[in-house]
Length: 402
Image 1 (cartoon, rainbow, N blue to C red):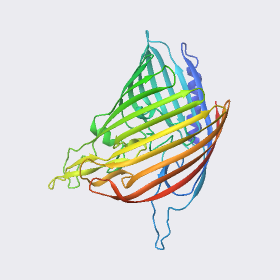
Image 2 (cartoon, rainbow, N blue to C red):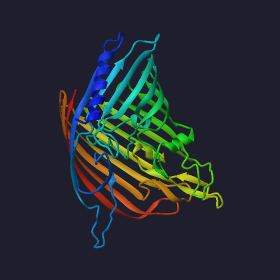
Image 3 (spheres, rainbow, N blue to C red):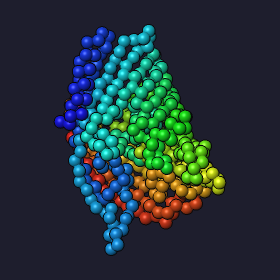
């Protein structure tokens, strides 16, 4: 066993043993051991050693005209084995207190198999009101998620992000309202220096989120959300001058879910601007540049992305997923685009899965087909003269859950 992992696990278990003696506290340990094996017919834009699939790479021809990315691959991974603990604490007057800590072995882009924090938050609840402080799912991810074996849970059509946040929630028998201020940690906005938290830190304005849902008191609901992001891409121009620059983005979202007995149908749609910190596509471009100082103005690329997920069953549970994404360009003429997939016009994904579920165990298989259309950008960042590339992906998974 890796020495650092052994020490971390030992400290964690020792600490929890000591905490278990505290009065008015209760604990629930949970986790999973997960193994996935996948096969792709093509090289892809991906992360976590291929575990999180985004979309197939564009053609890259060698001198003889052969596609360098037209190569299949196969891998087995288990980094998404997890361990977590739910903590219920003593009340503060009428306020119920709780917390959650969860980690896996995902590591980072260069060091896989090491311990990584997934969730770490506290929650204060009183009646219909609650306040969460800490790291957990990004609010736009958590309004609704698809049910998939694939670890990307629908990205890039669906945001995939965990972030530090302060989130207020009100829920009664018919409605739910949430508002949050969100910062960036493991997943950050893309800018001139790649993905970095500094763009949001220098902005001094956290991501702002609000949503409103109407529900039936159970698992069926309809809702809408709004999200605002303002980042500072640079503090100094290429000419060496101190600059004051900012890129603003507004994302609108609508979602809905209907569940009855063994049947579930869920759908979600976005109009996003520069939402690259959530494993989606997009970015921004330069609209104006001062010829003396090099200070720039920007406009975000707008994307439309949607998905639908239909599932049925319990012990044997199967379903289908469909996603579609379209680059709508910027509102103004732009140059020097920065972001993810800015030369991608549109893409779609169709997938089908089947799982066998018994207490503490899940066995599943999934087939995924993704087609992406690449081209060249016009003056507003839209993509023209496109050609398609596709990937077929097979995933087989086994999970032992405790």
